[in-house]
Length: 68
Image 1 (cartoon, rainbow, N blue to C red):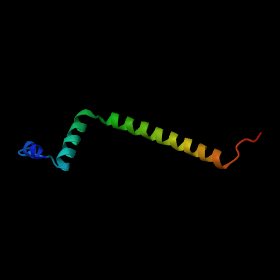
Image 2 (image 1 turned 180 degrees about the vertical axis):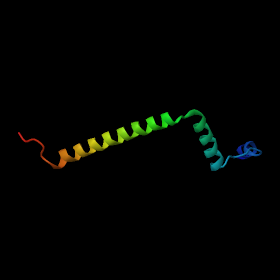
Image 3 (image 1 turned 90 degrees about the vertical axis):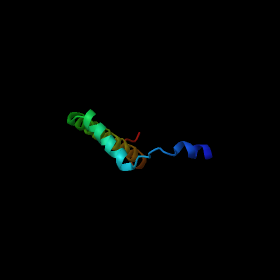
Image 4 (image 1 turned 120 degrees about the vertical axis):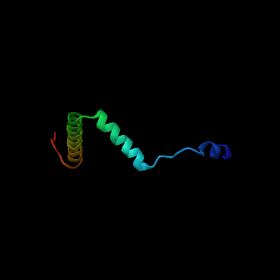
């Protein structure tokens, strides 16, 4: 453990706000408004599809859909 203490000494540990600013700057350079909108549409579609599957699953557990 003593060796690790000597290695870390003199190094700057970034704070959370520094990391968030760096991520924000990277995202502004690489992400366009179209990509963000497309990602929101895809995420919303997956969420709605998942909700549909959940409702169908609960319906099949609790209701008789077709009886033979």
